[in-house]
Image (cartoon, rainbow, N blue to C red):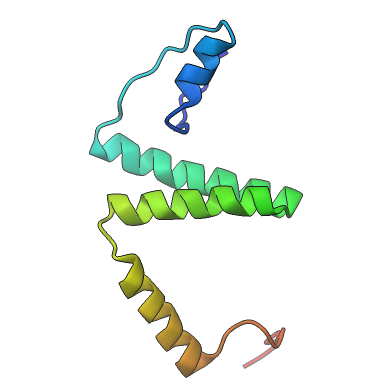
Length: 100
């Protein structure tokens, strides 16, 4: 079966343990960035479909990989998130803007 997608680091070994022969390569920076974005779309879609903590954990794993690849500081990101929450609020009140 052909995939051509980013997988978790231990997947090739798991495939071998199950008797398969994985064919893999290591992505360069450009391909890795493209595949991370594809993986993020995939995992978000899976979360939307399943609405499970397991799928949300997969989204978080990809977000952490994106942050690491882009050299984004998670503390800085959290600070930006908190500042936006303070200035604009969060999404807790369930407000739907119909017109402006």
